[in-house]
Image (tube, rainbow, N blue to C red):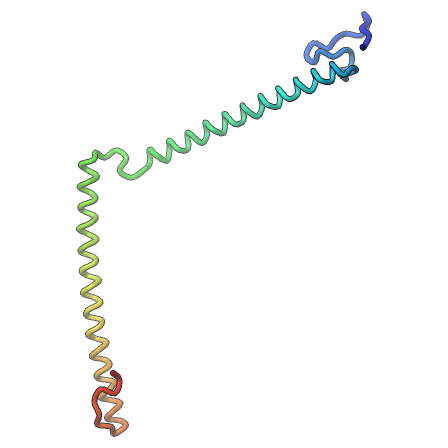
Length: 128
């Protein structure tokens, strides 16, 4: 065991005699235990700060969700409006597709007639 003399004060924080260097196995074990506790405390504090920061970020995102402050009835009305808009756009797309298909057929027919005329061919339906 380390000897304590009146001129060798015991470090109150570490509980180790003199310069803070553990001199016995017991002092070394106590030193390691304290170091682990301090490290664990620091890790827990950092994790707690991280959890609180992430919680604040989640709360912020939830508060900014569209429709967050709408009633169920208001949300259902908005869904109906969006569905009607979607159906309207779908009908427009179908009409545009139908018109494009008709135009394509007109162009194919005109091209067929022009090509047959230029080649002197009198057959119909070559490009079908």
